[in-house]
Image (cartoon, rainbow over all chains, first blue to last red; front, side):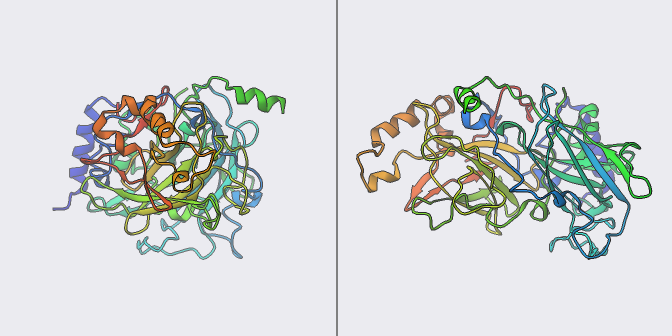
Length: 249
Length: 204
């Protein structure tokens, strides 16, 4: 039998009573798809080897500047609230993660993805794909122009709706920092009902996924603005001989 | 500083994460190309058709590549990084080169990350090269001997620390010109997944 929102809410409440860490519980039954897709054995702790202490290199050969503007990819203007999203990518010691790849994807203003498998009967926007890429600057800053995505239904349970969000894929300065996450918008009434967001049971950690409205990011007579900083895990990195070689090269 | 939590890649990652040539670290026609492939399975043994696998590796000489071009491949620069999505059968594949050991006495491996719909945070693992080097079928004076390679796996600190009955989940098998590495997210043959010091543990 399919669960109702009330069933899910009860499960979310029960899970919130268990002590939670700063990361999502990968074993989180209110998100039904997770039940068979998470490891049950504890992760094996290992010291990273050298290849894991480096990240792939991305450069301007890989990403064109205009890929950071999701509103200019078609002949016409996309519908919806035009926004800028910006922030810094930092490592756990507060150092900027420079020159790394940030990929974003999202639904349109009506809450529909340009994806064959998204059958939510909201309109497609012919002028919006919902995909962007950029490299972080020397101080770790990323910035893109887009349209605020809409919330949308999904089939986790009866009458399930996801809070509006933008998917982020981020590379750190070493491969162990590789992260995929979702950025949410402040004040969304769907937060308490959403098992993906609530899978992070520590409320403070959860709030790290919410962007802040920032009037300084707003562009006059053009778009509103949000700021969201992304802190990756620490690097735990000791200098390698090859670092020194590279510096001398 | 508090790290941002991970979240599932969701069902529509193809939109933002797919691009041409993402799983071809070298062209499949490259004389030394090896096919690294396998299936991703869930706890019921069913294929996972909406997973993303990424690999990061040294080159055959054991050097860690420091070159851009993974997103716009020029056909000859080896960048060491690639991405593959599973197909409806849960199958993924890469065309790449076999990594060499980055440090003397260490067994070579592919660093692997796994993302999927239903998986709330990414997983890390390693795909070690199997004992039998490809060069054995085509012996050359510089080929690594089977004994030497066997010694590397047997001496590897990670593999030694893993329960013997789970060790094989970290080692690819060789079949013709391919390396096969299946990933079990859960179940009897659950892959050994890794965590690192200072990386906040999703299992805590």
